[in-house]
Length: 389
Image (cartoon, one colour):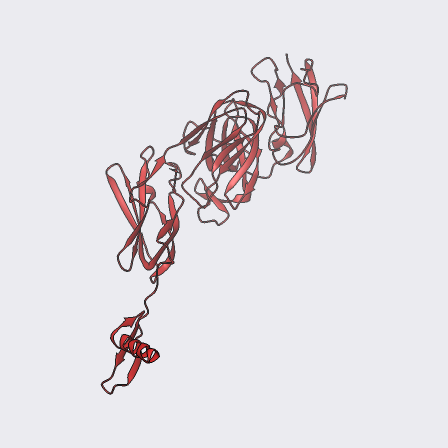
């Protein structure tokens, strides 16, 4: 009897209720019929409404690249993604949308370069709209992301070393930076990276081995002339926005593999360093023992004359205290210094490839003429240097 009553209760429940999209009905004949509609209600609780995005910190007023990208998730399916941006009293917006509503969508916006001006910081936010007109925002509270538009980044670096980064507004690239090792500095120092305009008229034109007069990118590292106990690593960003393996300089395209780093010496002459290229991050890296203005130029294949130092005299107690050998970063070559009698007094086998008129024991050598010798570009290169105390 209890079983029969339970069965009748279930039949009654089925005749009067619908559940999870299934509709139940009873015909007048007394027989029970089960009909299922085509409506299926999706449980959206397993899709969290959120936006994954790494906020921009800085946009370069020189390159004017500001890319806002990320991935949005919404259980009720995404219809559109909107980027709102603002500065001072100016505003703008952009819309991205999937071809059909989806629960997960990767978006990308490029802030118009005409909107980016030096010194005028920008703020932005992202709003995702679902087909049911519900929204999710980044930042989640509906506020804004603040982005600096400036040329400088500074940081105090202590005796333990550290890194100074200059974000660039393109999350798909690497970042211009300097990596200072432990004990490279004698005391805590404010290290500054400043991005310069390649068309700045105060910058001198380059000559051979550079292929162009103006650089592709240029940065000043300060304190200017800062010396390090051990070399520091600088990574300079070059711009290949379409990832075609070429960069634009003076209105022409040059292959990335032709790029080299140059530094500006005290006479205002661009001197080639070299460097290693990371095409994945669009970075060219090199080691330095001192700060200067560093720039990226396309350069020709170096000849033996290009590797020779431009200085002919080193004055250990005067202004010209170093002889710099050019283009040797990344070559793993060895420079040997001989006195006039042919005795080897100094070996330089790593960056910095420069001579300070000292022998291997650290003592300043006597005044006179010295001979250098090294291999580069498949050649044995030699010449003379005068030391004047």
